[in-house]
Amino acid sequence: MANYAGGEWLAAAAAETLQDRNPATGEVLAEVPLSGAADVERAVAAAHAAQPAWRATSPQNRARALMELRQLLDANRDELAAIVTEDMGKTIDDAAGEVGRGIESVESAIGTPHLLKGDNLEGVARGVDVEMVRQPVGVVAAITPFNFPAMIPLWFLPYAVACGNTFVLKPSEQDPLASLRMFELIDEAAIFPPGVVNLVHGGHDAVNALLESDGVDAISFVGSAATARYVCSTAVAHGKRVQALGGAKNAMVAMPDADPKLLADGVTSSAFGAAGQRCLAGSLLVLVGDPEQQDLSLRRVVEASAALRTGAGADSGTDVCPLVSVAARERVEGEIGKAEGEGATLVLDGRIGGGEAGAQLGPTIIDDARPGSPALAEELFGPVLTVLRAPDLDGALELVNGSRYGNASVIFTCSGAAAREYRYGVEAGMVGVNIGVPAPVAWFPFAGWKDSIDGDLHANGSDAVDFYTRKKVVTSRWK
Ligand code: NAD
View 1: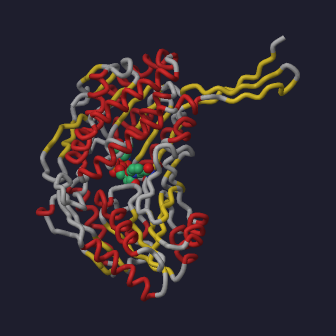
View 2: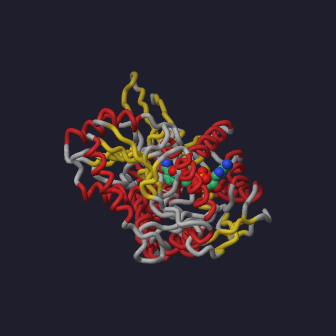
C-alpha cells in the first residue's frame, strides 16, 4: 500500500507494516505501512506547495471540484460500501448508509461559499468602515478512527478544501482501504491539483509527526477519549488549532409510556448495530417507572435482542457484525467477565466462546452492574448494553448527567412534555426522541459535549467552516 503526496503514489520510507484483516474471515487484506516522520513530511511539504494556488482558486471553482467528487463517490458507492464491509466488518446495509452519510458531507460542503462570506459594519467613526473576511488556515490534517472508515474522512476533506486549505489524511491503520480507494478515484479523475489532498498511512508515529510538524496548521481528530485528550494537548503545545472528537457512553431512557416497537427496535439497533462500535451507540438503558413497568420494558428489549442474528457483515441476514478484530472481541469479553465477577447479572450473554468465535460477539445485556464499574461508566465499544433503573424522569436525568461523556442521549416516550423536559435538561449534544441513533445530517454540527470532545468546534455544518478559516478584521479610512 502506498501513500499519496503531491499527486504521486509513494512507497513509505518506514519499513514496518501492520496486517489489516477482514474481521469476518481473518483473511489478510493488506500490509499497512506504519509511516514515520519522513513520510509525513513529504505529504505536508506537498500540501504546503499546493496551498497558495489552491487558496487563489475561486470559492466557486473549489466547490465545483467537490461537485465532481460527489458524483464520483455516488457512482462508486456500492464498491465503497463493499470495501467497508470487508475491511471494518459492518453489514452491507450499514456500510451503504455510512457511504451515503459521507456523500452528504460533500453535498453540505458544496455550499461552503455561502458560509465563507464575511461581515461588515459601515461608519464606525467618521469615514471609517470595518469588514471581516475569512481566510484558510493553511495545511490541515485529519486523523480518523476505524469505525466509520469511509464517512469520517469525508467529515473533513470536503470542508477543508472548500475553505481553501490543503489537506493530509491519516486514516485508521486498522481499516484504511476505503480511504485508499477514495484517493485512487480522486487521483484517476484528477479532481484536485497535485498536493491539495494527500494520504499517509500509519499509526502512532505518523500521528505524532503530524502533531509536531511545523508545516501543519490545524488538526481534526476523531477517536477514543484518551487519544483525543492526548492529540488535543499535544497539538495545542505545538501551537496548532485542534478539534478532537472523543468517545462516548450514550444513555437511552425508556419511559413507561414508550411505544413498545419503537423502543425495542430503537434500543437494539442502537446498542447492537455495527456490534456497538459507533460513537452514537446507546450502551446504557435507563428503565423508568415502577419495578413492574421497568421489568416489562426490559423484557421487550431482551426478547428483541435475543432474536438478532450474529454473523458476517457480508451475509444479508446478519444483524450483529463481528468486532473489528479478535483483540477487540477479547477486550470486550474481558469487560463482560469483569462485570460478572463483580456480581452483575448477564440477562443476555453473547459470548460465543474461544478461538471459534473469531471477532464475533453476540448481543449482551448486563443488569445490576456495580456502581462506577466500566460497564456503567466507560465506553466498552462492543455489543453490550448495561441496564440502570430510575423511578421517574428526574431520576433518569440525574443518572444520565452523571456521565463524564456527553455525545448523544435518547428518550423513548409518547409524552411531548417528557420529551421536552429531557431535551432541555440532558447534558448531551445530540439528542434523540424515539430515535435510537440521533446522527445529525451533515448540515448540522456533530455536536458532542463534555469529554466527548476536546476543542470547541465540531465536525460538519457551519462549525467546519469556522474551524477551517481564520477571521481577519480590516478597519479602513479613505480620504
Ligand atoms: P483510537 O483512538 O484508537 O484511534 C483513532 C486514531 O488515533 C487512529 O488513526 C489511530 O492511529 C490514532 N491513535 C490511536 N492511539 C494513538 C496514540 N496513543 N497516539 C497517537 N495516535 C493514536 O480510536 P478507534 O478505536 O480507531 O475508534 C473508536 C473510538 O472513536 C471510540 O472511542 C469512538 O467513540 C470514537 N469515535 C468518536 C466519534 C465522535 O464523533 N465523537 C465518532 C466516531 C468514533
